[in-house]
Image (cartoon, rainbow, N blue to C red; front, side):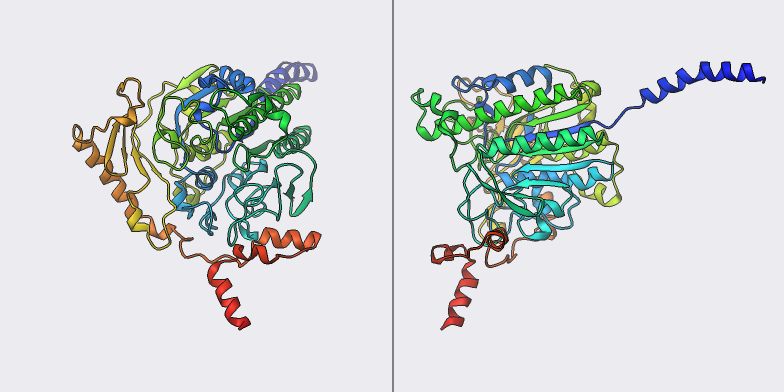
Length: 499
């Protein structure tokens, strides 16, 4: 071929090659926002007559809503399921305190998995899966860490679970990349602001990111600036505590709206997957106002304790907007779904660990065939050494239609129960074969648990390590009023030594 023909061929082929390269899909940024202790009925778009949640209402119209999405009845367990892709008990998390909130060290976490696919990772808010060094988020795959300790800002419990001494939602001390920082502002504002700052830096670097904005609000303590809640005071059935609770939710909604504006301004909205998992468990302070037609609340195995809204928005991924999916789904499903979207190749160990399902086919087509499944909800929190006594206490074994609660109550979730939620009409005598089937599935699952329950006899440090790090950094030490924070057996032994 002569030189002229060679140049002509190159000229004709180049645009095709450019188009081919441009057509290559790029890894989407991933943002997962999850408030704490907010119920299905605490959002205006689900019928709350008092709440104002314009950002969530708008996001609902832009996203695919999973209407039968379930999490654990309490907070640390839900986080363990998200981070592991398996039932929380199989990561050793059976409580929210007493070292039983620590996610087992053999767990390959969600951020660790995403890092194998080239993602940088950040957490902003609540971790609640262990405060000792090897359990902290910076040791479990997060590159950027901006969190509080324990299960809530200012909360203190014996052993490993607890926050900085004397901490509060306003001007809190926060754990930032291995050291405490003293801040100014309200906690939710701070977590969103830091996440936005970090995401902005990463998108400028053209680095795909996973941002886990796991808020402590609207969990107690109900401390926030008055201007965030005063307009709810005096509303029907709204006490000051409920007003503050609603104010915390409205503030989350406002911050979420600002985050979505930033994503639009940055020009990355089309290829950013935003997941708004609207709570980590069922409702709390607002259920008497509106509970979205459900029975139960946080800490209970009924639908009101485990069913939460979960929204997905990803325009470039062809996720339909203003649509619903009624497939039975779970927090465990987030892990394999993000693995598929990120293009991560799961190792054999990861495959063995993950028991959730990949939701990607449903994100493409919400009406896709979805195989039958059974979800197991268990409140946990049994007394030490009393696991077997609590086998059927605080439990629900659920398929797409029925739920067997506490081994005594069977409810048909598709039945019309009139003005009452469906979980008030016990049909166990009508469908004994359904109860037997669900019970048999649960028996098989329960019999395999013991090797996973690594925290049942765990002994943490006598004093919370986050407090010790705070005192090391800023000075101070526990006083006599804090002695109760020490584990009882260690305190007894210490007293014996003194004598």
